[in-house]
Length: 518
Image 1 (tube, rainbow, N blue to C red):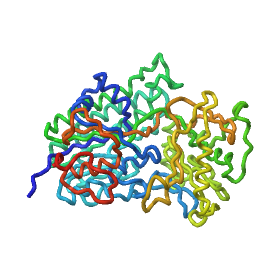
Image 2: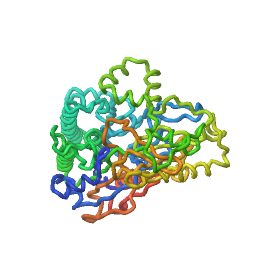
Image 3: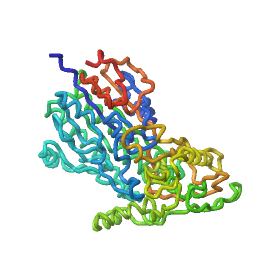
Image 4: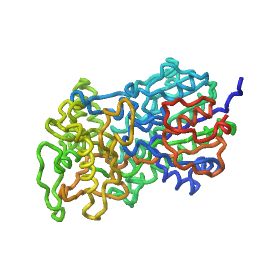
């Protein structure tokens, strides 16, 4: 019988920004991360966040691209009805790496990792949605009594739904306190289960970085138009304080695991300012000639006109978050869903259009071409599909900021060129990664004219398309950089290190040799 492989500790960090980690580690403010950087290997990870940001976790778990899952976002276009539908995490129908480990007899502990349901067959323990951010799955555990035990010993996670938090400083101060309490509580729970359970692979997710980036980015970013250099509310150090709190917990968890335990610390995407025109894609597509009626654009040299605004988004901006969520809880589920659909897409009068904007995470806009035979109200012949996609992409690439002259589109992806799998035809056809390296609130092009983009989100931070990985104990050289690494590589790396052959369904590769891993 082969010897038992060394244990692995996996720490997933939800939307933790790599540039901030590097800066604060170099400055000595994050000593645990600095120790990992100097003593182990590191990599920047190519991420699905550049196209479909909500798929980063399923890509990490499965080692496969988003076309292998029915769900890419919680609000999705349904081609059979030419309308929107709601999907929970049960629709993420991929096999996570911990189920392969379980089948091979390895004992696993999976603690509160985001955006995934409770596994049916697991050799060990699992907790879902205790304090994960924006997870559309049931709060549950295996064994079933574990969640109640955690509640009795540690209580609920203190953050709750941070999307319900208002912009006023008092609410943000309370959120800051709850996030810091959540970081510490998560660390305590992790060490408690690490000590109590027998495990070969322990995987814990920290979601607190996600809420921190969304709500406190402008307090940190001195270039942000909403930044207050006087820091009159004392919130400028919030993101740094939360990152340093996580560093302390990571350091304590690593020390608790011991020097013989291999460790992977990773994030599937980062965080940055929220500059985009995703909510204005319907009007842009009309002006480019892909809607039912083409509006005549003004000369880009003339003054900007206001872009059309979905009134449901304006209403959400005006009403306090707590009031919205309180009213929502009293409504039937069907009405709740319809309000969300209107918030994303207005009235959805799509008949006769060649292309429509469909929901995706706001930092990346998404476009669906309505194709005959594929979409219920499709009007584009299949033979013209590629031509239409390329024409839309060309029109979007022309968009620029009229004040600076800089392009506002960073990357256009034709999804059928990027991904493959059984659910490919359910994905958008194009995605638009907006430029987030500078502030802009206008767009212009010869076809579109000049449009002023109204702010339609209370948050100041959004997802950035860069992930990272830190590895220790896998046979790496100190300070080694791993070129060309992807999200898909994490799952096969964990399996190979545990002495389990990665299945063919995984598109990634083990980042370290089997000889070093086992």
